[in-house]
Length: 201
Image (cartoon, rainbow, N blue to C red; front, side):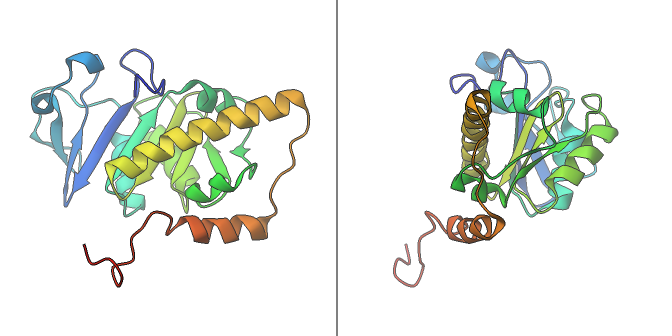
């Protein structure tokens, strides 16, 4: 995340779910010092199962995302463009067909203090029916069926936010109509997915 400029310092956090357990990065630890044994495991109610360090302060937000979706991974970033867009609008509109990766325009959750249940609730409202949301005056959150998918969505979301900022700085962007957003959302839902009937591997 640091190399891709999705976080600064020790900001942002990542989790992955297996059954009723969630592995999540600890709070305040520089990523260069993070090793597998320092990643804590917590239950869906937030209690520690095997956690040598305190979890990220955003554990409530991660757990809310798992309660709302069938995701197996959550990525929370403080990337520059996504954070900037979260200061300006209530949603990132359909400026490019890649918005279909998220199920449509990406909503911005109302601002709430980091690490609180209020932020988790605001995030859940914005994420409903989507695979990403922006967090007002804060950053972004993406979910996925795998950690790789959630991470890729974070990268794509940052790119879309950057494009939106550049386009609106230059003029009034043309947006895709809702019917096209529906079409590309359906197409992208199977993009890169192998057909088991032809490729059982």
